[in-house]
Length: 234
Image (cartoon, rainbow, N blue to C red):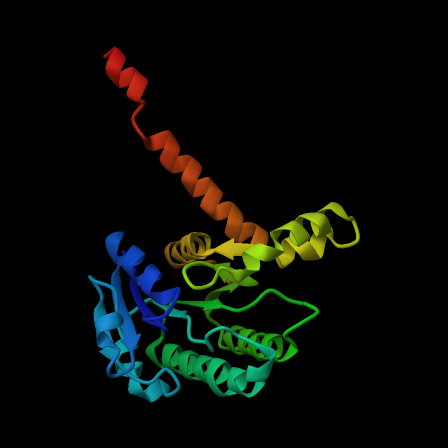
């Protein structure tokens, strides 16, 4: 059992992860802004605080062994360059400070796949955030998805044929795989794995590994299911 503090717990990935961890028997403290308490997942302890102000929730991180940081600007776009530093980067500074003061064992951070030909300001903020996590000396897992498909986040499905063409060409194959799309279940599976299996140092999970973990979990679950034909034979 892990004791996990999650920032961004009411968001797109945070709510799904909170519910999954609680269902697996972990103790989850979910950070929420005042007025958003109702959006935390069932089975979690809700903590009211400001993700941009670590002092507002540091006391609640005490006793936790893992901090998962999921705060970021919704639907990133080039026009939001200033917000990437004011929200994404500032919230990481707050989370790293809170985790350091509370002496958590493991830090999990969702960054972004890079390098990439677009979203330069977004990537720059996330790369700087990665360095903050590394410099803090945590046992840390940094995940680097490019785009997470799920409810309300499906428009990149139109690009699937383009990805297939890029993966066929030797000159673009590596970049196409590194910047490939992942699904919400895939990223949540990878986050659960990161929480339950903290590394000895700093581990980086790129898109291919994020996708592979979900596939491997699906295979294990299938093998564990009872064989309906054997049951009938019995």
